[in-house]
Length: 363
Image (cartoon, rainbow, N blue to C red; front, top):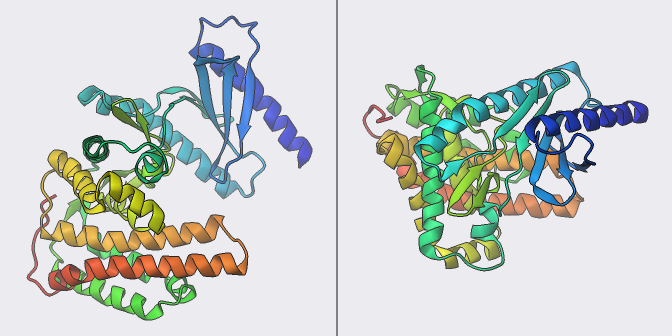
């Protein structure tokens, strides 16, 4: 295994140099390059190719994990990489054309074989750090503007990738919450009874809004503040490798639920910059301004998707963070507290929507 990994790294270094000189032809071919690897728990190996300390000439490499497991995993990684390249090359530039303050890293080169994507290096703090981290606080007006830009980027992304097909997202969410892998999450986190309540309300929403139809589109998949880089007066959205066809609520709810999942001190810092309800409003208004207003069924879909997003956070925790029994117990207790808080916020409106007359979605 060690020899195969070593050969893979040597091949990556050679290909990295080739892609670097293709992207920056003004750098002499004889110039010494450095390849720096990053540890990653994600789907791809990450490396930075740079020429000395020159920050103008750098590129980020995403490469397939050659030594990782089954052919099915390798095929999935390859599809994810090809999807990210297509979106960065074809969709992201159209978003920037409409508003130069919104963007993504430029795709500089792509090699399907052996599976390497070269990207522009985007400098700047993550939005999660700007809003929730310790440090200089942005003005409330700037924080609001950044959140509006996130909503605008997402609305334009969804509009540009709309499939022309439609379905009922409440039915999809109901199926997701009934998935066999979800009940054990609630059981391990000590809230099996709450799971039954959530499922009952979801079933009522489906019955009350069977006529609801929402167009599917490409969703980012993991649209959260830690995948948004603040750069000057604009934003750059990164890591589109998890993009797939789905309903827009998935992206909206995950971004929205991120704040609910932060520890108390981070929520307090964020509230000092801009109260959390105003942060939520700014993001959703930025989206609605470019995608159209949210109708009652939309709000029901978003509320239920917000609960589903917390389940996704728990599943991701279990995938990448094992820890000791004490660490797991503390995480479970925190997740249960967050879920109960979000459910208390969403349940009254969801129960009301579940008992109302059927209506058509506005989207």
